[in-house]
Image (cartoon, rainbow, N blue to C red; front, side, top):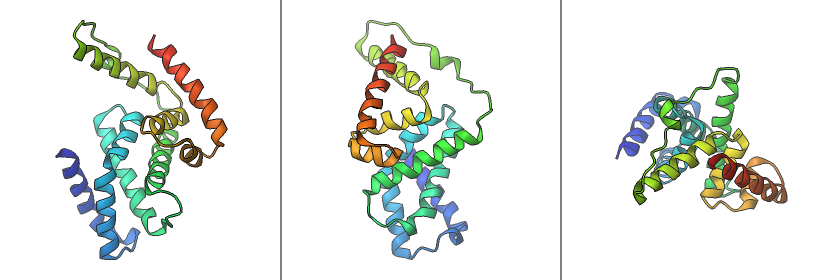
Length: 184
């Protein structure tokens, strides 16, 4: 419910900046539907690239703004999710590069893992470890593993990242090994 409210708030904001992209009312409705249906993709990018909740919300808004600006020029040559990934990842990565020299800090709780015999706790612990390990990867590696976890085909990953499909396979093997090492 909170995600939907966030999208509604964002689109109220877009009405104020409507001049950035001249869309017809049908295109605007189509865009709102698109973002509502695929907001999970945007949230995944935000979670992987920002640890602070406020920063994630800001990144979400920036990604949706960039999607809004680019929507009129979407030609339909790629799948809509491929297009959205490309814009979301480029926005997240360019934001990190702008902050380039800022010291990166992590909340202490990110490194605190509960030790318990409870299966549910073990799942949560393993999930936290996986998130932490993914955050240790480079920007491109994070993008690749996120798309792989979303079962995006390697040819689409290659198209989004700008490398060959064979290079994606090689890098994915290296990324998996890196994550195994970090989790141990």
